[in-house]
Image 1: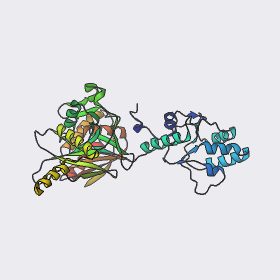
Image 2: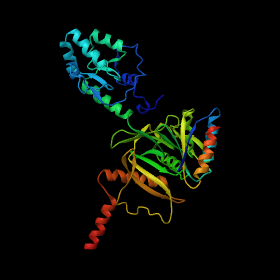
Image 3: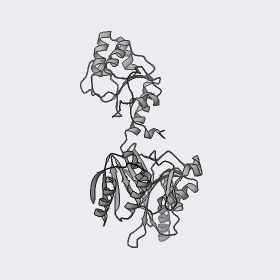
Length: 313
Length: 82
């Protein structure tokens, strides 16, 4: 079973189920009709006969204005205009909002063209906003990264670093300390907006952690539902690196470094690893520090204010 | 960077084969990645490599970066070819 909407495919069958819509033409296979664009079209102008700049490929929403206008048209005109809209390629489906049922002429044309008609019980605004939100998530650019995604105090922390550096061990300790694992080793990332990246585990590896020397363990079976999470926004990256004498690490935290994932900038901390360093506590502190920064507090700034005040005194 | 295209050919006993693949990748110091559709999987990560099972029959690209990249790509490609 797909764990979240993130694992669904953007097709008309899922759309219909998601929005509790009625399918007027059940003989058409909805699952094979993929939706490729999150743009929607309100075809009011096309109903008046103006087809310049009109393109198919989008879900057509017939809201109150379209419905009222259809009711004023003569039957042959309706047939002609609807047939012309339906002749454009790649329209996934027609949606009539507010529970409006179209006349028989429209249903007939759609049956011939094998174009699904869905009836949404909700208002046009509600239907379109939910539809766009859902499609933006499903059609978002995506990538897969090697790392561990964990929710630490509500911050989505992506722990990265070379194989064997101790990402999974850090994740296990964080889970033991009451945080929630999203994914170990492989994180599927979606760019939902220019600000937001959402990470999930691949369906196959969800709940599992691999520990060198022990093997694969199931975190949900061992620690319960409170220890796992299905999806999480990515707020920061912790990059674990082997400590090298000549490599400089951030000592003050005054300047932020960023990593680019799918074109979005994510705040990144490079943490040098040496035997005996407690990575879980460092990750926890970094997460709290990140929250503090979001809330407008910066510890190094305050520290330097004190230093400056002392110098002037 | 060295890279090569191969077809995933996993007939049976996949789990063990994948575990072998990961330990094989671990023998090299290079960073080795398997690119498949829009996924980029670290060949030294057992969980990542397990997700490859669903790509049996698909073409993937093996890439390696490091001092022993050519040997690594050669070994991994041979492994997939079976």
